[in-house]
Length: 463
Ligand SMILES: *Cc1c(COP(=O)(O)O)cnc(C)c1O
Image (cartoon, rainbow, N blue to C red; front, top):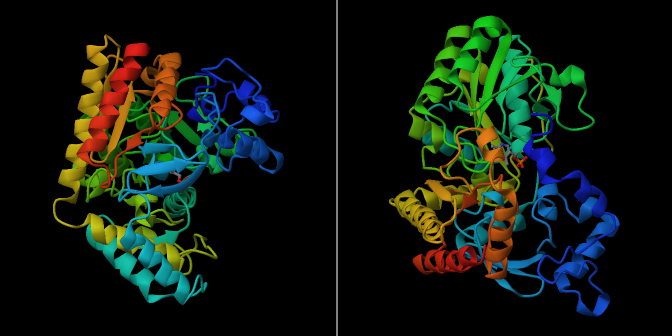
């Protein structure tokens, strides 16, 4: 498993070097060097972006490194659609990587944000609205007795891990290969050479002495998990897991895996951290833990909870949360934590997704998309499958939805990349890498779903 971290694959080495001297890669025209007059606005912007932004992007997967071609620079969004710099419209299944469950520029969210901004962008002091959000989160998630607001998912998971270590007085952390939990040092780790040995950094700049505290195991492998707890149980502070994995495409956990994680952590005095930054208020109103019937010790939230603004949260058992400063010895802080504009977007979004029937409708639409794509792939004779959980879906150039990272890695990548570019040409925007889940919003109409399936049929026919 040498370099099989999604992070490594998202930006292959040749792309990293290519990024400094932009090559349009012209997958359709075969022209590698767009010249001034024929360059699209997207290409011009990508070239300009690279002058002062590393790789032209502020987060690596946006660079299209995995799929090739020129990233689309978006000018505006409305409902289910986004428009790029060349004014081409796309049906958007990325939704800012999950947050936009109501679609782009939902009027109620925009109004809440405008009102909050006009009242005060930031105080760095407590506000009433953040209590409202904390109350709401603790009401919606029974496992959450106390919660702290932060500004990104990375911050939430990093803080939850520090808290778990501070609470248990232990250093070791279990994560699963293919799960992504943000980019803090403890989590940029891949499996070591030997089974059950300490992890190795998956990014330059992460000290081996930090990575060695992280044990990287195989998702859905119960026997391996049992073995680690049997031999190192008293050293393990926590398991952190994506309860439905959405960062190696969409991968479901088995019931046995879910049950084992809860039972083993409980038995050995370790904490179970459900990283619901992606799944939280995306797979259902009660999040993944509601669907699993599991009460984790700590939960991290992000993406949907901020309604498109930088907001995330971590929370859980009151006795564990009592260890956080200023109550306890585990330090954690943030200048913009609980930012009033972000909190307003979160409150407006959660208010709307709590409307009766919201997830029934979203789930049915997402299922219709997944089934439609799977049928289209099958009809075209492709090795292809699809799956959906709530408003989240996966498409796979595998005969069956994968269960482990190794199975995800066995996907036909060139075929996925051709599929991606075919859909892009058709005006359908899915994530520019096969390691990503897709997202449907409440703004997607049945007609959007049908148009997407029809576009996929045309693309499959040409693959
Ligand atoms: C997106 C994501 C994160 C990181 O959140 P950021 O806001 O990008 O820092 C952490 N965990 C999971 C499961 C995620 O999907």
